[in-house]
Amino acid sequence: MADRSIADQLVAILPPCRSSSFQPSPSSASPTLDDEVTKLKSDNVVQSLERWNDDLENQLLAGPVQKPSFTATDENLENNCSPSILRVAANKLHASILAQIDPSFSVDCDCDDDAEADKATWAVSVHLRRVFGFEITRQRIASRWIVLEVARPNRSTIFTFFGIADEWEQLAIIDGRFSYDETEIEQHEIMLYATLLDIELVATSPDVPRFASICLFRATYGNDDVTTSARRQFVNSQHGLSYLMKALLRGGQPASRLFSILRNVHHLIASCPESIPKMEHELQTLTISIVDDEKKGEKHGLIEVLVATLAWACRSEPPFPGGPSDRRSDLVLEILRALYALDPNNPSKSSRPTHDTLNSIGAILCELLHFPNSDERVYAIKLAVVALLLDAPNEFNDHLVNNDCVKRLVEILSYQASVVVIERTNSSSEDAAAVVPILLALQRLVQSNESALKLVKEAIFPPEDEDEFEQKAEAEIAKGKTEGKVHATNMAPLDAPRGTLRWRLIQLMTWTETTVKRSACELLWALCDEDSTQFVLRTGFGNAIHFLGIKKCVNLPDNV
Image (cartoon, rainbow, N blue to C red; front, side, top):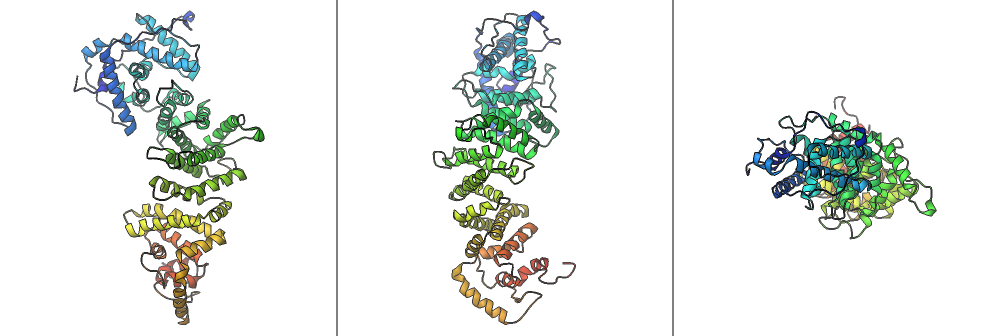
């Protein structure tokens, strides 16, 4: 047995399915039985299932696993654990979980023969159909729920529960006992995850809603037919989004759970836009009953809830971002990405945020920009802030200037330019992803705000170096050489010492990636007040000629 996987051992002891299922009489539709449950007494089974539980926990944390290969059944193991014991455990677990939802529910799982066991199983299935809106077969009860009860109070119990749900198609097809369509995620699975977002088991249980959220994400994330269908089923279900929004609003949650929930919200915003108004409606319905007296009757949509969660994450104790195990930085990053996907400026995607909400967003973004760059988690957040600024309302510009954030943005530009120009370890597409967003964000900022223009210009062209530059510029112009509208023809920049930020930006002007060089040119053009002569003096005619042709300042051959 030592050579066999724990998965093989579990499959070996699962009870075979009959060709025909039990059909109870109408009088047995709602059995009322004693709720005392038979305890499992097979230590061999418990040990095997606990080992399998550990395997599943590792697999779940590591991501998708390879489908295991099955071997022949082990008669000794099957003799040590009869199908009736397994059936009792499965039914017992269903009863205990359903009791969390409906305390009036009770079913006796202590059955001596197959007919009575089937009756108990059928009663659980009927109640599941009423509570969850789906029907579950006996083999699904046995395979998906048994280990959670057998291994209790193992601390990793919930990993097993969700691991079985995720691994079902990889475990149960053997000897014709079970049939499962691997090309379909059934709606009742999706709704089970959604329902578990909204319940709490005993206080000592692991974080059930968090792992339900993880399973929901894994079931709906992707572009293939299976995940697309699962996502559509979830969005169009009667209560799926309601459970998700309730989970988002629940107070006193750990950051790790909120992060997992936000990941589902972000995914739906980005991949399923039709879900946005539905989430808005659910949140407005839920929040109208919890606001304070001063704002009684005011509805809060998705943006308002995301911003409130963002404010809590970066302002709560201990000071942000916290220690290595603190997940608030992940939560903040996920919210920023969700806001970017939501696009507050696009009313077709979501309701227009209020003036107060926009001010709150601006204030929080400024706070985030002021955190030190030494923490990698914080720096990733700053890059997400930059992405948001690409399409931010003009009101944000005043926030950035008044809160000394322009300097922070220039620091990001300096570092990103160094990564691309000096380290040069990435591909051209990675270069563009690294530097283009901050180039565009600063260009947009300086073009719409005079104060920002002055601050960025002084950061890139330091005032202490300007006297020397002006002297060289006067001498160059005095030569009287012109080209088109340009009154200077110096081939190299007059003042750009190697390693300075202005030197790095000039290097980007001739980068192989089109978006990189165009973005660098546009920023420098704005800093030169869109003056072609100033542009050439600072960057050099050789670097500037192609961009000057685009701006119709010089005549270029037709084939250039």
